[in-house]
Amino acid sequence: MLKWDGHTHTRFCYHGSDAEQELYIERAIELGFERYTISEHPPLPAGWIDDRKLMDELAMPMEEMPEYLAYAKEMKRRYEGRIEIAVGLEIDYLPGAPEFTEQLLERWGGELEDVVYSVHYLPGIGGMRCIDFTPEDFRKNLLAHYGTMDRVANEYHDHVEEAIKLAAKLPMRKRIGHINLIEKFSKELPPIEETLIRRRLEGILPLLESTGVGIDVNTAGLRVPTCGKPYVPEWFLEECLRRGIACVYGSDSHKPEQVGFGYDWFEERMRRG
Image (cartoon, rainbow, N blue to C red; front, side):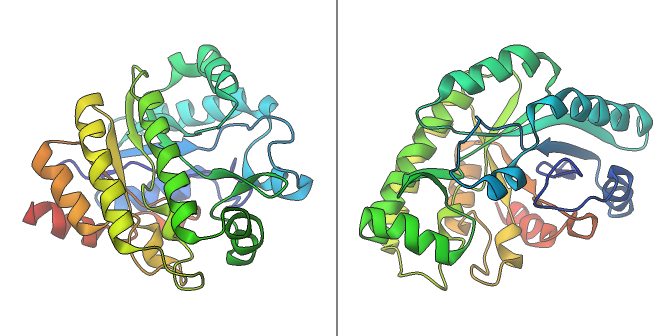
């Protein structure tokens, strides 16, 4: 099994660390990784979130995209022979604004080897809202909008299904990001009916199988106090393996010390599979 961290960030992430990329990559080499995907958040449409300060933290401005891609390519060149660096993005599913992503990919898609396609936003009070900002923001702007956690979860999984369909059209390697991110604040919000989560994820399996889109086996939830578990349920990972769906470990590292986090959990389950 190729040791691969398929979901990582850079100094171009303004809600992460300003550490230089060499610190991330040297740690990956130290831990024995053979492939390392750089998958930064691309720009968002202007005013996507009605909070200027938050917008500034969510994604790089459009003018930084060429610099980011040059930075990632330089890392690929510099580390050739020591570790395979894949140039990628963590693309957001943007409900109501597919043309923004289409234009971004028309301009830069040819430079990408890897895409993590993620759902971070849902319509809520006052417009688009982050599902993974804070428990308080979720309660105020999403739970209050939908009325119950089950309704929020259903909307989220609807968007995940649409994201998979869009990812399927891309020519490079692609996978759906942290498929159960909706449970990030599960310890501080009302519970989502477990049978609902299982039913929706079971419904997604044939879609992944038929489209060839893989999953980001994202362990970041293990280090989030309000979650305490990976963003991929163990039973779902087992079923993906049984069906031949690509399962790629992702640390979702926003700091160098997070590279490889939770890989032991992933490795153990892959061996069982």
